[in-house]
Every structure is written in C-alpha cells, then in structure tokens.
Amino acid sequence: MSVRHFINFKNWNPDEIESLIDKSIEIKKEPSKYRTALKHKSLAMIFQKTSTRTRVSFEVAMTQLGGHAIYLDWMTTQFKLADVRDEVKYLSRNVDCIMARLKRNVDLMKMASASKVPVINGCDEKYHPCQAIADLMTVKEHKGRLKDLKLVYIGVHNNVCNSLIESCTMIGMQITAVTPIIHEPAKDPELLAKAKKTGLYQTTLDVKKAVQDADAVYTDTWIDMELFFEPKFQEEKEKRIKTMIPYQINDELMKGSEALIMHDMPIHKGYEISGEIVGSPNSVIYEQAENRLHSEKAILLKLLEDS
Ligand code: CP
Image (cartoon, rainbow, N blue to C red; front, top):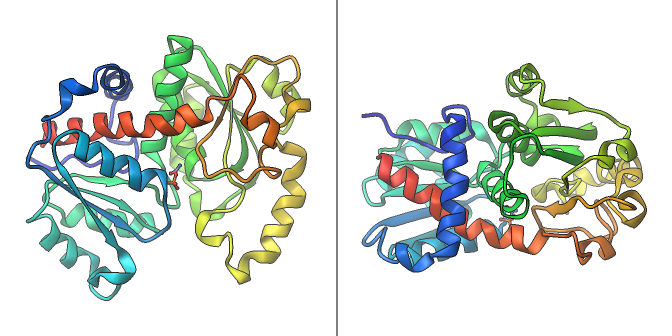
C-alpha cells in the first residue's frame, strides 16, 4: 500500500477534509479520549525555517496523544549536507511520521517520495495545509457550518492563500482574494484553475465591497518569514508595504461588519492588521492559533490510521 502524505489537498477529497475539521472539533471537546491514541509513536519534526505555532502544536499534540516528537533543525543535522532522500530513507526507518517545514516544495516532494512513513507539510513556499484545517475548524466552531459562507482573504497571494483557496472551494465555501501582489514562488496555476471551475473563487481589488457580506476576513504577513530580515529583500519589502497599506484590516475597513477577524500569526501590527482589530470582539485570532493543536491531532491520527 502506498503511503498517504499531507502536502496539499490534491490527493484528498472534500469529505475527508470536512472529516478532519469535524474530528478536530471533537478532539478539542474531549481530549482525554485520545490520551493514548498514538502511544509509542514518534514524529520527527524538521525545520528549515522559523516557527512558533507549528513546532509547539505538533510537539504538544504528540505528547497529549501518548506519543513523542523529535525536533530536528535543518542547519544542525546532516540534512544541511546530504541528499534529502538519503536522510529521509534513514529517518523513516525510525519514526512513524515526519512533519517538515521546508523552503522549497520540491524538496518536500523528494522527502515524500523517499519516505516509508507519512510526510506532513508544515508550510513551504506554496502551501500551508495544516493552517487551513485549523482555520476552517475555527470558522465552523463559530458559524456552525462552512457551506455557502464567504471568506475574504486580504493580503499578498502566498502559501496560506493557496491552501485556503484549495480547501474552501473543495468544501463548498466561497473565497474572495483581495491580493494586489502575488508572491512569485507561491504560484500554482493548476490549483487556481481548479478553484475557478467551482465558481466559488473570485478575485477583486475592491476591498471595501468585498468585506461587506463576508463571514470571515483573513489576512497574513506581507513578507515571507525567511525574507523579513533578509538585506537583499529590503527594497521589495518597502515596495510591498507601500502597495499593501491601503489593504490593511482596521476599524475603518471593518465598520458595520460582523465578520470573524482571522490571522494565522505571527502578526505584524500596523502593517497587514491594526492593533485595535487584533483585540476586537470579532477577532478569533488567538483561538484560531490554539486550534492548530487540536487539528494537528486530527491530521496525525488520520495519517497514522491510514498507514
Ligand atoms: N501560522 C504558523 O504557521 O505559525 P508559525 O510560523 O509560528 O509556525
């Protein structure tokens, strides 16, 4: 039997995505039921980029499921020096699952092809599927359903935006992207073409109109994490801030709206979102971040069950 990976949603069907969301909600309500569900199982977590939530949520998830997680920093392991496939061939003989946050999707695909155990995408330049499951879980908790709701994503079209477009359109949710800038490495024309065919994915630059009937309004950083302090990227960073500042989520934009305010964190207050909106009554940002824990559990259980 071939191994099931979680790289994006291409090999997953809408029922499976909805099941992952429902399972996440169920686990959150009754975590003690799953205390030994992954007893004696080990997860390797490989990071080539920085992280707070992905690292913490997967490690705590494994502990709370009775298993164990091992943190591996790309730069202080032989991943830095060797062929990624050789390292993963070795690693997958020792652990039951691998979660990796890599700079390039192409390397993650090499990992998946060499691995005997499931590989989870902890965010690469194209996709952030784990984040999307926690996001939709949060919307479902608040709204009681997902179908026919409208999410508006405002920001740079990036990995988070791709995974939201892919998952929303698969489960029958409308998504409007207000993205004046497209982050080149995130481009996936096939994903967008498939989403367009559903009639649920739209784009606009009229941000005011887009948020009027939104059920959730979502933003993310304008600058990819590894580029934030990169000297060579500073000119592009300034250009982006100038282009994007009219699209900031703030009190003025959200006046009269009851939409949930969402952000996957880390937050850059004063850029993509104002400080007041982060703490506003409709903000579910910290809950959304907490939900990474519950949804990582659902993802781990599903993959280890299937394998
Ligand atoms: N949202 C998210 O993936 O957070 P981290 O970058 O802190 O893992």
